Length: 85
Length: 210
Image (cartoon, rainbow over all chains, first blue to last red; front, top):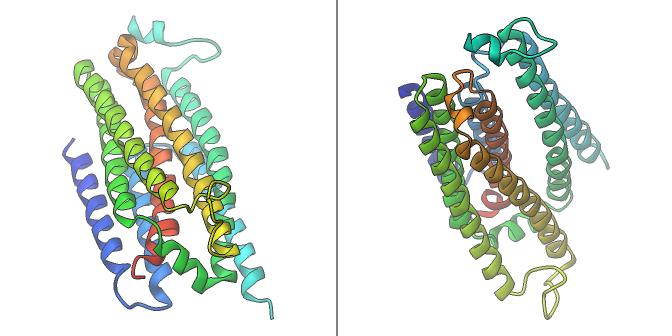
């Protein structure tokens, strides 16, 4: 139970950090920081709240596969738009 | 034996059966993640093609509504995880309390989202309902994305609240130390939270400094 509370506290801290960072003049780095923090929050939720830390390889693979395909889709679409002249 | 009553065909071991239960849920959640993946891909495309306009449109969003709702959903996820832990620790009463508390936070989220939609209706920025039309074609695109993304998310949230309530009303589910029903319902609720964690920077944070 204490572990869950610590994870929740970290999530709230990350929310504060991402909100603060949105007001800083970080230029091009801004979306990277915002989505980086979102990914960190997602990692905490997956690992502790969704119990991935206790699951075996099969369930981790099933979850990871979904995330991997989304990463492929986002990367390929970005590769298209970023390389158009 | 409680263990044997819990077991059903074609499984011979409780561990295998539990793994299969969770695998089914996670594969379903993977398909849900794909659905929202398309929306995030659309948001990224809008932002890459029109970076300035995207930030300006995001700046019109109600940042504090979005931030408060993020905190509410993260807390409700904690409560769902607590419910699973309580059921596994043979504390059905605490599991029930945590489930109802998560439902209450879900309702609070919907209330805040509803208030936000009301403010947007009054500001005349809802595509199709705006009396004088939206300011630009891009704003129309952004608002379409906003309502599709948050509307679809809200539908999932309502479904999650129904599932949490079913688990909260089911005494047998709370007394099940394997937490099969509560565990799977909690997984669904965490996904609703995960999607919001990414919607927050996409919709609200992009233009926060505007």
